[in-house]
Image 1: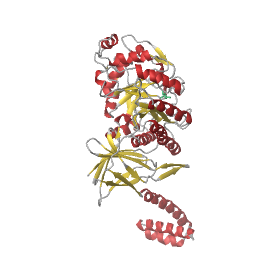
Image 2: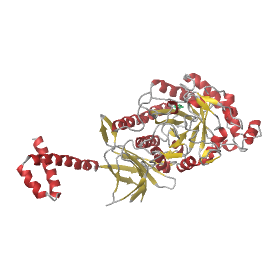
Image 3: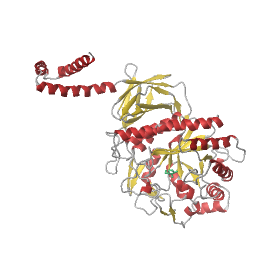
Length: 561
Ligand code: AHR
């Protein structure tokens, strides 16, 4: 019976198609005759009918409800932070080409890279590592004579130290970002770190301040964030929580910021090493540090707990960064969504010891980590950046925004030429990645106020992997404008979103959308505009604002009353 009904339904669809055809009469006649030719025609038409039925499924509207009357926490601009380690071509070639280079530069720093980074309003840059930071000795990177050393972590290559403290601070000045310095706890001393901060921040005429002035910067620098160690449970020295805590207390006490402008307001925030995963080893680490924080005395303090989490699926990283299909797309996105439970797990422990949420959870290393590009030095962590990474970035930024009360800073790894980069360079050439464009589209969300947005995301399944179809966040910017960022995760189906607002009547929407033909579409030096945002707009009809989103797309729009 069911089969009969299905067949009748199919016939009805075929009939509707035929009615539209200019050969209607001929085919209707042949249909009755039931010849083999007609049977094969019927089969083709069946396929056509199925194909035509697909957009009907896609057109099923998703109701999105935004409650403007219930504003949430601030989406701290520092969630859009970057990370630049002395690793591969991240710093050398990516930022620094030297003042004598033919590549246009200002005091050795690439002008094209600076302009691109200014456009995404980078709030802060974490430097010099990473694992590199725990082997970094700052004095080798200042003054006219630089010490040439090695970079044993990352390919064992020469570290010329030509990009050092003053060059980093100059770079920050050029792009308009704050400094997030990671001090050497692994192989350095508290004294070395304390002197670095004195060199950077004192306004008094100390010997170190005079040295800074002689190196071109008489005024004290501002250091907004101080990372005390990096992955001290692993590459940073394989410490136990107890051992690390003893170091944290010492560094927190003695590594002082002397900048007069940072004493009352804009105090330097100290970030302790936190977890690197969800297993008990990491929950115990978070527990130990936060318990100590709860009982801390006047002589030490911390303002943030770092967390590192890469989307890698399995070690060593083996997923290709380009030249993959929808299965790998779904696998990577499924894995990246685990960021949500990770944030929640560690936030819950932090809530136990710090219910007022004074300590921020700082996700200062995150992003997709794939197999090194064929032919590249495996120690350089060079990879392409595809539309999949744009979707991955949006999903993570949305997770951070939804936890903005606790997650107040994040640093994608890494800014240029390394892992999930914003920018790729090759000598004088530069290309902006799909991830870069997501950061650009999300600029209005920097320091905006989170506004709850609820929707029935639905799901899509590929190869047994089920993912939410849609993801969205909303926020009000400082000027009071309401912004919406929506990701259509489904690689094949478009989505229609019907927006309903409580407390506002949206008549139109305008912004940008980012998509491309394939999940692994990339921008290259020869084809830099394969994945670039295009304008997006919608107008309310009959009082309803409906947004039509392309498959595998990220869209950011402002809603107008
Ligand atoms: O980002 C690459 C490396 O990953 C960092 O140096 C380290 O902190 C992490 O393990």
